[in-house]
Amino acid sequence: MPTKEEIIQVLRSVIDPELGVDIVSLGMVKDVSVEGSTVRVTLELTTPACPFRSQLKENVEKVLKTVAGVSEVKVDVVARVAPSRIGYNVLPSVKNIIAIASGKGGVGKSTVAVNVGLALSESGASVGILDADIHGPTIPKLLNVEMGPTSAGNKIAPAISYNGIKVMSIGFFLREDEPVIWRGPLVANAIKQFLTEVEWGELDYLLVDLPPGTGDASLTLAQSIPLTGVVIVSTPQDAALRIAMKALNMFRKLNVEIIGIVENMSYFVCPNCGHVSEIFGRGNVKAACEKLGIRFLGEVPISPDIRINGDLGKPVVVAAPKSESAEAFRRVAYAIAGSVSVIAHKKKKMGDAGSVA
Image (tube, rainbow, N blue to C red; front, top):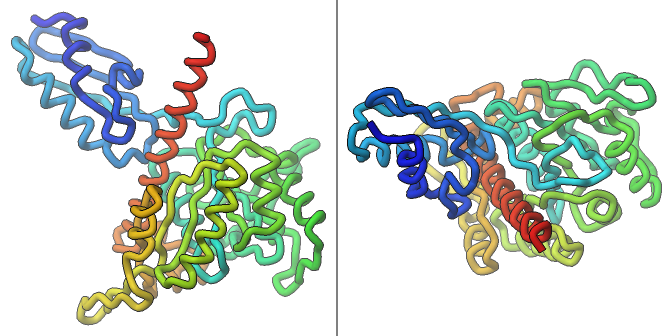
């Protein structure tokens, strides 16, 4: 019968594909028990939206079945989101804050934000969405939130949407046709209030849907609170991608980590014959990412079900969970979660190195 120590040593040969480190060194092996010829391992992932969940489980089973005396392997997989934000006074109970940005309007940034948030929440993560587009708030409409924010002592309790997602937007406080005619300082102050005066509670991911461009809102967010990083959304056209690069370079100058870029409206699949049309071109964002050494987070089709369900306030991840559109958003969400885990791991290593020094 193999010993527990022998099992742990064998598990060092299993490498996390995202982090490039063995699962024992990463602390992912939480429990090992040996009963006769049966080995049971508890594997704790760094996010419930891990794109390599099945692969890691299979690899653990495979290496343990090579151990002499082992005839049965049981692997229990659990998850706990790794925090990239540790020791901060502002929103200390929020593990990761992810900005969703674009260079220009009309690229589907808010649609990407809500569907990614829903994909993360359905995996088991606790999620919040802050609509920081003060002049053009759309999140309440996209999520069809019936009951707005309420009072929570001296703070504001956010609205609750699908899967328990917490939501805050200035749209809750306006008539549908009421414009916000504010200058930059007022916009900046509103975003700060939504960050600090809302009772967000404990969250694995807070997604901040920024207005398009490189204006006050993006600058305020980057300078007011430590961000995990930013996701850039672009369509494939050269004009859109050029403007997206401006947003990317702004965040780089502000020392914000670039999580990656999403290509939205990448292709259209005819619902009648299945023919794929690349209406706006396809692959330009991926090519740009490869050139710049930035992670390509995936592509999302232009599809009637995304538009129709968005207008109804029931995003496609909820309304048509088995559709190609929903699966595309899940792939993007899992890629984002994986990248965030890498960022968290790097920051932990830096912190450990600093404490040793």
